Length: 267
Image 1 (cartoon, rainbow, N blue to C red):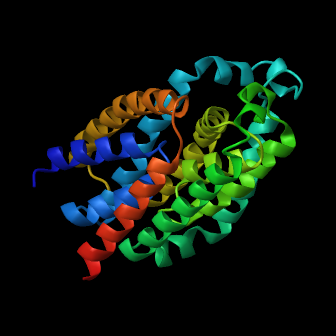
Image 2: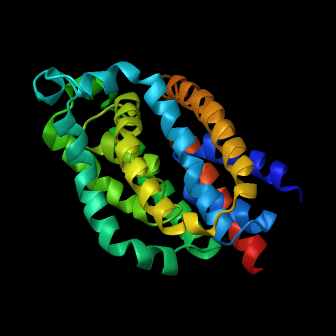
């Protein structure tokens, strides 16, 4: 298959799945296997196009990110602050730093992704069931999240280190369980994804950039742009969806994907 078309397809997959609770990592591993797009260049490409998705969040929530660079942005009583973001990302960053190599070596396969799909689905279904009669009591404003709630969401985010589990799935499901609405949990999940993903991307790129040549740059540019545009539209759609629907449909989709993955690769 033409590599330009591959770059477009994977950029679309990244843009759609990065912020939906269906696991972008899981889908990227599976699509990469299906397209035969693997190896050092593919690894760099998969990481680089995540920066496009990150940029879409910065653009959509630019007022909040601008707030972080002011004096008020460091005060915990002035809305969502730098400290709220730090509380949500420090736990997972610490564990990821030490477990990064093991995760890449042992957990990046269609089989482990299928397991992650199912486990993440169970978490979301449990969270929806647990809070189905409590929606009016849940916190619906991301600027009112406490440091404690932020830290607990960060603890749930550790689950996303298992490929297929989904970072947004673990944080939104966990957010529901600790008293946030789907929308507030999703918005917090999107915002804390930016520094977390940026650090992870830069770390991976520094380790693998030597495998690139100038001929690969156009693929990176195509994937980056496609990822940005699709992620932007995906986030807008998802926020609207959460205002009127539950996470259960995503959980069902994940279980179907797990079955299809196991059937295609192992049966």
